[in-house]
Amino acid sequence: MPYIDVRGVEHYYEWVKQSSAAVNKPVMVFVHGWAGSARYWKSTAEALSDQFDCLLYDMRGFGRSGGKPTIVPASESVATSQSSQETSAAIQELTYELEEYADDLAALLDELHLGRVYIQAHSMGASVATLFFNRYPQKVERGILTCSGIFEYDEKAFTAFHKFGGYVVKFRPKWLGKIPFVDRMFMARFLHRSIPKAERQAFLQDFLDADYDAALGTIFTSVSKAQSELMPQEFAKLTVSTLLIAGEYDQIIPAAMGRQAAAMNDKVEFALIPNTAHFPMLEDAPTYLQRVREFLQIPSIV
Image 1 (cartoon, helix red, strand yellow):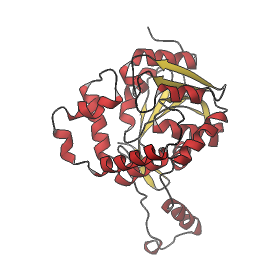
Image 2 (cartoon, rainbow, N blue to C red):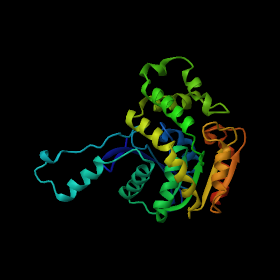
Image 3 (tube, helix red, strand yellow):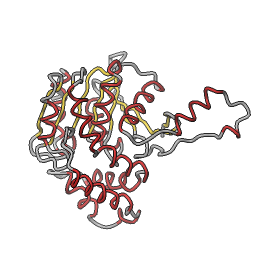
Image 4 (cartoon, one colour):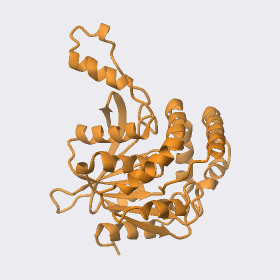
C-alpha cells in the first residue's frame, strides 16, 4: 500500500485511474468525513475515472493514515540542520483544527507535485475543503461539497453533543465489529436507503480504527462556537466554483443547512438528492453522478 510523509505523518493514498487516449487527465482529489476513510469514495472515483485521474487519501488520524508525527529526536541525529529542527518543531505543533487538515491537503498535493485539481469532499471533509478553497484557491479548479452547510451555535446542544461524542469515541471495543447486525445499527442514523453490507462493515471498522486523539479532537473543532461563526464567512468569500450536494433526509447535516450555505454566494450551486441521507453518493449513485457530471460539464455514460 502506498504511503507518503505529509508534515511528519504517514498518510495512505491511492490512485484510481483508467487508461485513456488523453495524455494528461485532470486530477480529482477525494476527501472523506469524520472517522471514515477514502474507502467509501472508491466507487465514485471509479465511475469518474473515465474523465479524471482520481486521488484518494486518508486524513491524519483516520483510516490507514498515522495519527502522530514520526520525529527522530535531534539528539539521535549527528547532523541535524537548523531547517530540519524548525520543521520538526512545526510538526510537533500539529493540532486537530480543520485549518490544519486543509494545510495537510496542501502539503500532500505539493509532495505529489500536483498543480490545480478538482476536489470532491464529504461532511467534515467538506468543511476542510471549504477552508482549503479559500486558503489555496490557486490549487483548485472546481469543488464539490457533499453534505455540508452552516449551523447556529447552541451552547446546551453543543455541550451535550461533545459529552456524548466523548463517550462514543472512548468506548470502541474491537469486538464490537463481530456482533451480528451491529453494522446495520451503526449506520441507521446515516442512511435513508440501504447500502451493501460490505460498505456498512467498512464504515464500522474505520470508526473502530480511528485514532483516539484525532477522533475526539475533530469532534470539538468541527462542532464548535468558533466553527459556527467561521463557516458562514468562509462560504461567503468563496471564489472557487462549487457544487454543494445535500441528501433530502440527512439527519447529520440537514439539507436546510446546505441550502443556507449555498445562498450566501453566487459561486455555490445547490443540488438536493431525493430519498437519500448522509451518503447520497452511495445511496443513489446514478443520480449523484449525473448531478456531478452536469456541474463539471462532462458527458454521462449511458
